[in-house]
Length: 527
Image (cartoon, rainbow, N blue to C red; front, side):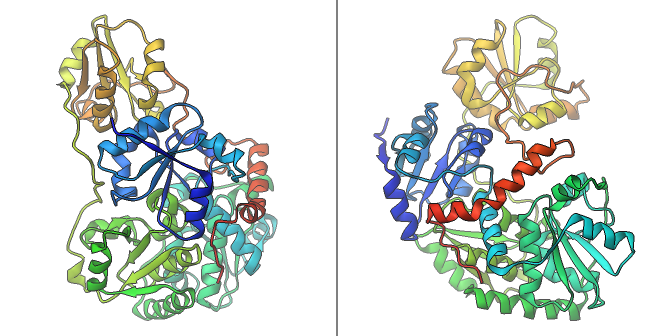
């Protein structure tokens, strides 16, 4: 095993202030990460490290610092990263407790840089907003008003403002003239909480649209706390854009990008950036996933612009890296880039593309290391084995997927908690591992075999192959081998959150600007 060094809080703080590239990676599961972490920490759980790290930290000599909170995960992660070819890997001295002891600020929740930035934007620009009661009154009066939901379409369908239209954030400047052609129409932008409604509203203000525009203050949380009813399963989507409206939106977006300091690149410049061995360059296509799948620039990753601004840390996990954005209309890339530039990123929009350049098709495929060898079995053999005593089936899919449906008798587990899992399982003559596709299960099988002399097998094609074969399924938390810590339950998602949790979340968001000041490393500059 290679020697792994340590890196101190003060080293990371100095690098952040100097705008040097670094990846500070929290290798715990998402729930403990969300309880407390540094501002620019990216969460890549040890359980899924091999599946995510090549895309999120693409350059092998990036300065990577991993940490946990005393669980012993960071040392394992460092060794795995070195085995994957990363050459500058360190463990945070003292872990999260060491960060705190050195005076480092810690933050709650997920996507905190983006959320804190949104709060800063509102405090600096006094982004206009209307309370839930005011918006309800406008709707009741059948006033000249349109409500645009800036979240992903699936979030919008879960719960939304009655009559609202799904217009994910990066689409707003491009689509608004089609949805509110009358300049007197009041435009309301909402999300579930605050960030995307603030950023969406301020995008329209920055672009100079003629309409009055306001955020729905506190989003669907505020709506619920006001005692008002949300709609479910709505399916109103944005329309196509006329040539005239598209051209005007492109002029508006370019002006905002220029004011924000967004750089311009053509393909030769992109190749120069990508050839630089000392810098990380991300290439993101910010159009809708459907457009990306139909045709995209080779080597680009599909990250719709609104989600990119909301979840930058989840895809661009190297702070200080360069980001290049692509679209085919001159609006979505420029508007998204304007926000990233204000968030301290070196960001460029790729110009000079033709239709012929969008010649790759299909979904983005993450780069992956070589998969470990495993003993594969098919659906029929597993079905037969499950009729016998001694076969213990482990499922490593997300806990949400497991609850939704899983193979009868499967025990749900987390790969990084295999030792604890083994203590809770019945005696086994063989273990069979699965997940949605069995990709993660193959890596887990390698880990499990190192802990036991019992034979370990992998279901070829995973649970999806089992489902396709028409085999039976069950639902619910039937057999959890470890607690469901793989995902943090957001107080603003779903429809059954306690009022106290929703109000607490809003109070937390309002406090983020003060936390940014205490932390002092953000580098945000609001236009």
